[in-house]
Each structure stands twice: as C-alpha cells, then as structure tokens.
Amino acid sequence: MDAWLTEKFPNLNYRTAFDCTGEMKKLWLEPSSSFGIPTSFVVDRDGHIAYIGHPAPLDDVLPKVLNGSWRSSYEAKAVDAKRISRVRESSLSQPIYAKLGPAMQDEDWAAALLAIEEGLAVMPDSFDFRRVHADILLHKLRDIKTGLPLMRELVEDAINKKFEAMSWVVMALNQLFHPTIDNSHLPHDDRFAMGKELSEQILELNPPQGDGDFKFGCYFPVAQYYYESGNKDRAIELIEVAIKSLDHSEPVPDQTKQRYLTSLLQALANYTGEPACHAGLCVAPQNKTSETQNAVTS
Image 1: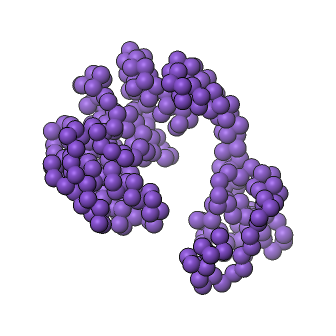
Image 2: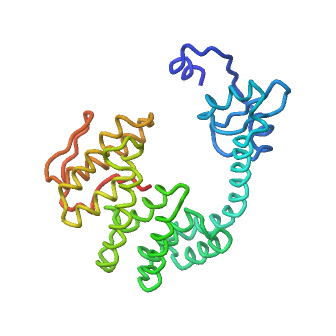
Image 3: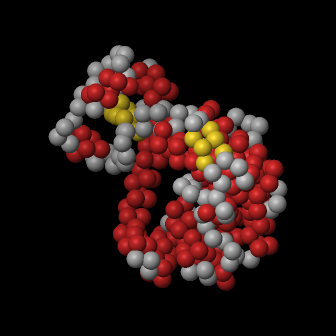
C-alpha cells in the first residue's frame, strides 16, 4: 500500500496511516454500519464525527464541515438517512441471499423463485430482486404466462422512476435485448414493443448528442434493439458513441474500461461484419450477434 500511494500520489499534502490490525473495521466501520471501502470519516473541530461515507463528495463536504454548517444541514441528514436505509435493506436482504445464492448455483430454479418471491414480499421495489425475478421467470423457467405480465409491469415501473431511472430502464432492456441472452422464446411483438419504449426512454435520459456519462454502459442493449429491428445504421451509430464516451467520461478503472470496450467492439464488429478497433484493441466479428463475448450487464 505504501508503494502504491507513493506511485499514485507522490505529492500528498496530508499525513496517511496504515491499519494492519483491523482496528478501523472493528471500531469505526462496524459500529457505523458502513459498507464498502473506501469509507471516509470526517471529525469536526468539536471532535464529533460529522461525515461518514464515500470520499468522492469530500470536496463539497469539507468546506462546510470547516465553517460549521455541515452537521445541521439537510445534506448531512440526507447522507445519514441513506446510510441507515442501506443498513435496513441489508438486514432484510441478507437472509434472502443466503437462500437464493445456493439455489442459483445449483440451478434449482423453483427454490430460487421461492427465495426471490420471499424477498419481494419484504422489499417489493428492490432493484436486484426484481431483476432476478424477471430473469428466473423469463429465461430460466421460461414461464411466459407469468413472466410476460411481470415484465410489462417492470417496464412501466422503470419508465416511471424518478430516482435512479437510468439504472432501472437499462436493467429492464437488458432482460429483453442483451446480446448474450436467448430471447427467441419470447413473443416477438411484445418484446419489440417494450424494447421500443425502453430504448426511447434511455435516449431521452441520455441523448447521443448530450454530455451525459455512462453511455458506454447504457447504449449496449439499445443498439441491439435497433439492430434486431433492422436499423443497422442506428445501432452502429450508438455503439460508436458509446465507445467514444469511454474516453470522455469520469475516470473508469482500467479493468472495467477494458471489459466494456471489448463488449462494445464485439457488437460493432458483429454489426458491420468487419474487425473493430479502438485504443489498440481489435475484435473480429462472430458468426452470430447473440454470441457476443465478455458482454457487460448493467
């Protein structure tokens, strides 16, 4: 860690310390019910913990902590409320995942369905639970009678979301048009009608000519919808925009960027029938678009 810090941040103007005994986890992370690393703890001039959370917002938080306005602010209360909400969600979801994980691993789809329906009973609007529920019914059990109305409801709810709307609509569209998923058993007209609604919503939320981030993550199934609809030019255009967005978005970890880039180039090669190259990486077309390798799910 010391070598990594020296290499990545040679000009740090504050002191750093290393915890080799796990005391930070025991005395800070666990009592604060914090999840994930990195987590920042900001102590104010009075010795109170003023902020607990990801370090990304610290540029905005620290000046308010220093001038004394943070602790009583609406923003501080919202951050704490969100953290507490995550703790509650975790306490409800962990017993469900304890049942769901083994069932999914064993491909016991009936047991997995029971577990996920138990989860939805206590967390009816859980993003992950609803995604898995749709996947089990539509793609694992291929229960069209039950799964199709559920999918229509998911599409409607995703489009009407006011918060995290993009994540929901992309998740729903991936159920219908992700290249790695075999959707040949789904009714054509229903699938394409829902795909049209979701694709238009994604492009409205994050238009190609706009400066919104994450096009590389959300345009993948949209392009597939247009390609399967017969609009190959539009599909190619969207994939090219997505590839360019990787170079202009907020910094993306190299491994993540490589994963997205490989998937996008594979789609582009499949659509054009020619090798696709970008940033020193080249991918040859495959025989079937649905066989896209290393695809990224959102």
